[in-house]
Image (cartoon, rainbow, N blue to C red; front, side, top):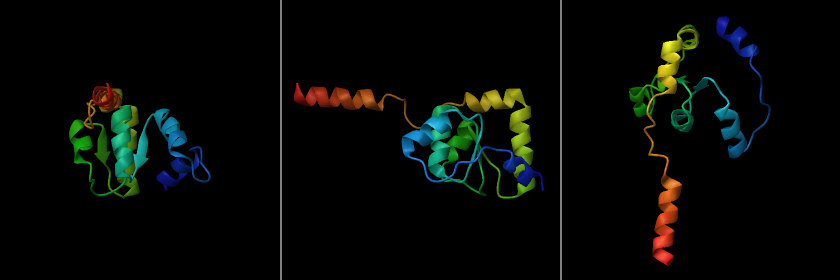
Length: 120
C-alpha cells in the first residue's frame, strides 16, 4: 500500500512531547496530516497546509479559508491529495497564504493594554 510505504519513510516521534515542543516541531512542518481540530486551527495560524484525515471537520472555516482540505479516511484519497498539494506549487502557496481565521494575532497586546488600563 502506497500510504504505508510513504509513512514508513517519515521521522518518528516516540513518546509524548510538551505543547511548546509540539508547536516548535509543528512550526517546521511543510504539510500536516491530522484528525485533530486543534491542530487544524494551529496550522491555519502558522500558515502550514493541512490535510484532515476524517470525513468531516468541526473547523470548516479552515477549509473555507483554504488552509485545510478534508481528505476522508481512504488511503488512496489521502495520497492523491498529498501528491496534489506537494506537486502543485500554486496550490501549496495558496494554502500557505490562506488568511488566518482565528483572530488577528494581537490578543497578547490587547490583554496587556486592558491590564495596564485597569491598574494605571
